[in-house]
Image 1: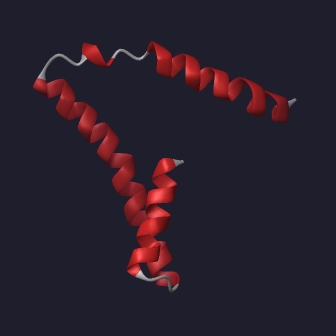
Image 2: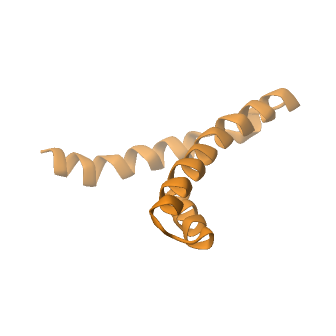
Length: 74
């Protein structure tokens, strides 16, 4: 049952949620800044975490950066 829910319902949930998002409700500079901080936190966390781990394992900086970009697109 878990596989069915994961494959079938998860994409429907994210599509439905994304379509209901109203970006126009961010009317002030303060709300845009909060939105930026909320987006910056996970991007920076993945960049630092994955990039540092990949770099310490032996990947070059460029390869580690590629891993970070791939993790952020997921």
